[in-house]
Image (tube, rainbow, N blue to C red; front, top):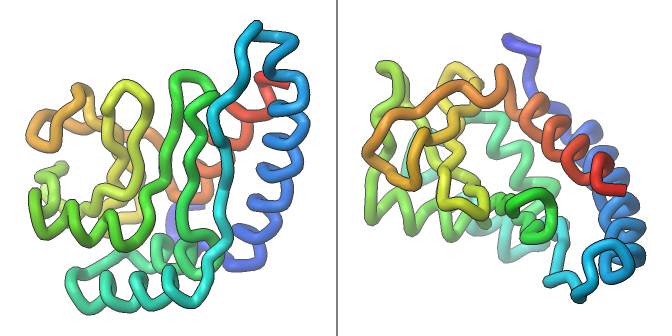
Length: 164
């Protein structure tokens, strides 16, 4: 995957599979866990999220794979997948960038675009790698979580389907 760019059709296919798996997971959730699930969804991009992506591109050097992702989906809220996973909207990413700036990760520019339920952050670097913070902080160390955004999404898909 490194060196290859994320394809919008692949992201659309990933969304379709994730959406179907989430639907199935939510149907069986209360039986498995004994309590109702929160709202779990991967939201397709609309005009307002595409405009927010354009504004993010104007604000900072956003990695191209993240732009591709945001042209297909605007965000994901998966509080019931493992300990929770959240792909932030482009407007949220822009706000966080303005407030915190880019995290310092192994000498490359990176942009925080997601988090988990424990407060750990996920950032994509200009190398295309996805990094995970070792603590719930913008300012501590980050470690490689995936070689690419596609690999990150594939891992997320496995986390959803492993709960079925």
